[in-house]
Length: 296
Image (cartoon, rainbow, N blue to C red; front, side):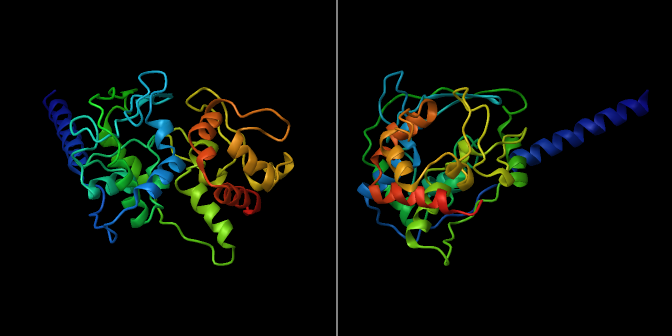
């Protein structure tokens, strides 16, 4: 009996030490931006491209831009987008540009806590220092909204935020944007938008049981989107098989109207409404060019 008790207490002590170590395990890298001056107009354009308005505005609630509170139900629990206004208590008004850069590109809060991957920071890792400075300048123009977002309602064990540090160690490999020297400037612009700010792979790539994207099935479509729908494959082969052209895809990203006359619905309709319809024609063509001409 005594031996059993000693073993049990030893196991608990080891587990407790492991949990404490996980809790205090530091993540993220120090940030020092090489660019201090940002362009708020360019930043506002990037914010539209990145889906910030769509995900951080509760259109069914008060609808105040970037005030957060948008509900995002998933198999892992329900997320609520945070307040991104300049309110110091409920938003990001007390942050520094370095805090912002660390959050956007590394997924780490000013307090050193990991963000859930519902925030597509692995894609935003492709932002340059200038991109981050521009976004920061744009967010500084957002009026403060003194309203706290709701707390995430996660299913155990995903409610233990420290566990995300293990998830990051296994699945996270954020890479900066690397253009393909053998491709055109237009194609590379499309690559940056798709793989970076537009984070198309977040919805069009299936995930494993732990919520990590399956890179071998990049852009092959996914089940169980937050709105309960499915996303179609948008590989080059599947788009060509569906009769898409650079012209028709670019037009659909502007209007939501598909070649057969139907319209995008669900989350893709929202992507067009709150994001891609605001992009320049050149950027929409670049997206279509990349998707249709990439090697699957």
